[in-house]
Image (cartoon, rainbow, N blue to C red):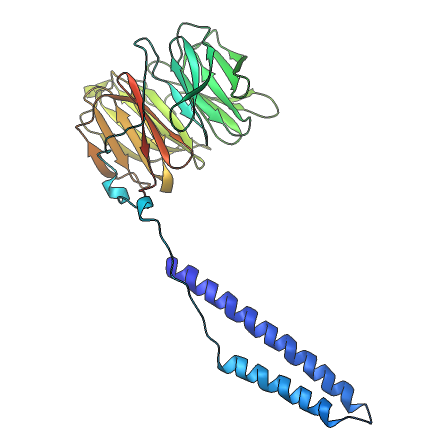
Length: 344
C-alpha cells in the first residue's frame, strides 16, 4: 500500500511536469504560426523561440526527483498490534467510589463516567472538568451519539440525553414493559438491548426525533436460552457479547445492522457468563473484549480470530475509546488509560 502511494505521487508529479511543458510548447507553436503571417520577422524573434525550445528539451532530458527523508517519531511506534496485550502499567488513573456503576463512554476529547453520586466528565488526562448529580438509583449504560453531539445515559426504564457543555440531563425515552441494559449509537440510529434471557434489541431513529423503528426479538437476536451482555456499533456492524446458560459460556459475534445476520462468531474461553463481559471496537476493525470474572482481556481481529489474550489482568469490567488513540478501562475501583498509538 505504501509503494502504491509513492508510485501514485510520482506519477502525479510527472504528469504535472509534462503537462506544463506541453502548455509551453503549445504557446510557442501559436507564436510561430502568428510570426509566419508577419512580414517583418526579426532574427531576435527566431532566436527567442529557439531558446525556449532548447530550454524545454533540457528540462525534459534532465528531470530529477529530490526526496527528503521521511521523519518518523519513534515514540509513536512502540509495539505492533499483535503485541497489544498485556497492557503496560499506566500512570493515568482515577480512583472511584465503592458504589459507582461500571459505565463509561467517550467521544473525541472526553470521557463520561458514573462516580457515585454524580456523572463526571473527564478530559484525556482523567481530570474531572464537570459533573452533575445522577437522579436515579441504578444506571445501565452510557454511549455517545455523534449526530446529536450528546451522551446518551441509559437506566433500566429511562433514557436520557446529556449535553456535555451544560451537563443537563434531558429524558427522552421511557419503558414500562422492558428493562434496558445496554445501548449504542450508529450515525443515525440508537440501539437498546433488554435485560434477561432471549434479549431483544430496540432500534430507534435519532433525527429529527427519537422514534422506534423496529424491535428485533429472539431467536434473531440470540437463542431463547441466551442473552445479550453487551453491544457496540462499528462501521455498519454490531458487535454483540452473547451469554449462554449452557456451561456459562460467552461468545463474541459480529452482526449486520440490516438483518442482524452473524458474519462471524468466536467463543471466549474460560469466561463466566454470570458476570459482565464488555466489548469495544478499535482501529483496523479490531475488537477488545474484557471479562470481569475469571479476568480476561481478549484482542480479536477484524475477521474474528483471537490475536492474543491476557489472563493476568486484574478485574476489568468495562472499556471504551476516547478519540482514536486512547482506551479507558474500568478495573476494580479505578479507571486507567492505555495509549493506542502503538497499533500500526
